[in-house]
Structure formats: C-alpha cells, structure tokens
Length: 362
Ligand code: NAD
Image 1 (tube, protein in one colour):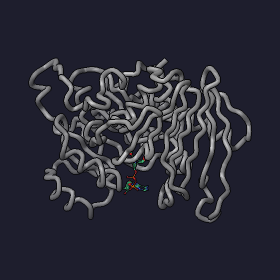
Image 2 (cartoon, protein in one colour):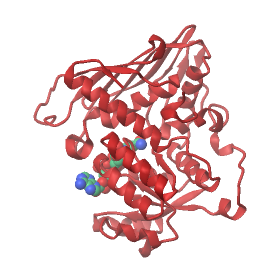
Image 3 (tube, helix red, strand yellow):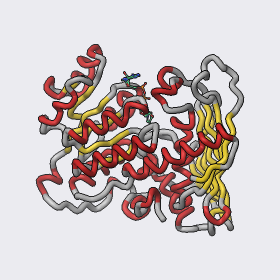
Image 4 (cartoon, protein in one colour):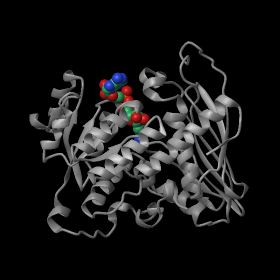
C-alpha cells in the first residue's frame, strides 16, 4: 500500500532525476482557469514563510503571493513593499475569517507553530479556501481527523508542506526502494538533527514535542517513501539532557526504530544539539545514500553504482505550483492531509514507546 493509504502519486507524476517536474506536459480542464495564477495567503510571517516560501513564490508559474495574515503589525509595511501586496489582502488573526470574501485568495498556507495548525487550517477551509499546512500537520491524530473532515465538508484540497516529495534526489530514493532497483530494501538509516533551537520549539504546548516533531518527522517520512510501506511497530529511547533547564518540556534527542513488514527495519535519530542529515537504504544487491538528505538545497546522492545525477531545484516553488495545478486540474495532491495524519500517528507511537520503554504497535 502507498503512503497513508493513498496511491503513491509521487512516483508516476512528478519528475525525478533527468526530468524536472516544471517541464512536465500539462493538461488543463479549463483554459482560463489554467492560465490564472492562484493567490496564496501566508499565515504566520516567521522564518520559514519569510526565508523560503515568500521568495519561492517569486518563482512560481501557477500561484503567487497575494496576501498575508499576521499578528505583528510592524511586519506589514515591509512585506507589502517587498511583495507588492494590496492593503485589502492583509489580515490579522481576529479578522482572518473575512478572507472568505476575498476572491484574490485561493489558497491559505499555514506556517504557524505546530499546535496552531489545526485552528487556522479549519478556519481557512471554513472560509472556502484550499489549504497547505506545514509539517507536522498537528500535534494529535484527533486534530488531524478534524482537519481532514473540515476539508471534506468544505470540498477543498488539504495538503501538507512536504517539499521533499518534489525534490529529485529524494524522488530517486523513492524509486530506488519502491522499484527495487537493487533488490528489496532490508534496512534504512535516517538521521536529522540541528545543533541548536529556541523559542516555541522548546514549548511543548506549542510544538507538541521536541526534535522528533520538528526534524525527526523527515526520518519517518523518508523511511515511508523509500520503502512505500507502513511501519507496524516502534521502539524508542530518549537521549541524555545536556541542558536540562532548556529541555525541561521536550526531549533534547531521541533514537527510535521502526519495524516494517518482512523484517525490514529503519533506525533513526533526531536531535536539537547535534547536526545530522542522512538517509541511507541497504538493499539486497547494493545501497543508496543521501547526505545531506533533507535541506532546502545542496542535497547529495550516491548509490553503490556511483553518484546520483540529479539537479537541484526550488523545492518550495515546485511544491506550491503542484498544489495550484492539483486545484486547477481537479486532481488529488500527492501530499494530502491523510499522509500528514499517518506521520502524526507514528510520531505519537514513538513518544509512547519512548515514555513506556515498550514496543508500541502503530
Ligand atoms: P518561526 O518561529 O520562525 O515563525 C512562527 C510564526 O508564527 C512567527 O511569525 C510568529 O510571530 C507566529 N506566531 C503566532 N502566534 C505565535 C505564538 N503563540 N508563539 C510563537 N509564534 C507565534 O517558525 P518557523 O520556522 O517559520 O515554523 C513555522 C512552521 O513551519 C512550523 O510548523 C514548522 O514546523 C514549519 N517549518 C517547515 C519547514 C519545511 O521545510 N517544510 C521549515 C521550517 C519550518
């Protein structure tokens, strides 16, 4: 079965190495709709929205930065100047629901602290907008269910900001594993860690957990998309706290193992005090490796046959363009809410295993 019970659209429809996705032939149901760029409003103007998404929206063909939603009035002038945003397309968290009346905004992109994703995703869907929500989708599976139900009820698309599904080296890993290019995969190693962190990421109520929620989720995703199967059980062990005051609410680091069908295993690490960035797959007749595996640029790939010949792309631009095209073409997104829900379910099982010391069935 594909990820989250969905067909693995990523393998067939999105370009890997040698076939960039922005060169794909396009089919449109309606010519006018196909030509119009869809308007995106970013909710939460922090590091990721300002550093990555807004610049990427200067390179998109099917969508553009049309509006902003912020609780910080002092940010407004610069954003409006930098991105030519009309006054009428600026919202705060109180008047956000009136975005329903704004035909410039087709898509709301939620880039807030993790625990706020559910509320703003549901409010945007209820306002009649399609939604991209950042990872992790939410901090509980129940919240994910409410978001998916709201999308169904509104008849709108809900996508999670899984940019690596549009990145050629990672797509090559999906093919390596799922097409069994060197035989079946036996074992995966995935590590993702940052040397430091701050702010809401250390606050359990806003983050839902520590590095597992923030960067470890990439390891869970990578194991799932490399194998194309779902983990059946997990075990986990929290690392030592070198700074107990800083990490009083969330783990500083974590190692965990995911058991997949047929005895396949994935051993993973996430940390807020160690830089790590690796995805490695051991197959019957060879191996493939990305290092670094998950950054915005500079991903390097190699297999036991030699270097991967993949180009670097603007992941966020391709991700947002694909979502806009999915809306225009009335097709599903390859990174839907159901995929985000499955990751949150696995993350919760990993925390349960960490706290209990027991093997937890997913
Ligand atoms: P950030 O701290 O830089 O920005 C958060 C924004 O939320 C700020 O503008 C802040 O003002 C606003 N905010 C509103 N209410 C807040 C509150 N109560 N407490 C704190 N901030 C509040 O964070 P970020 O790095 O931009 O992350 C935002 C989201 O994007 C997170 O869910 C994160 O996981 C995700 N993210 C995804 C990627 C990716 O590669 N897909 C990369 C970075 C972050």
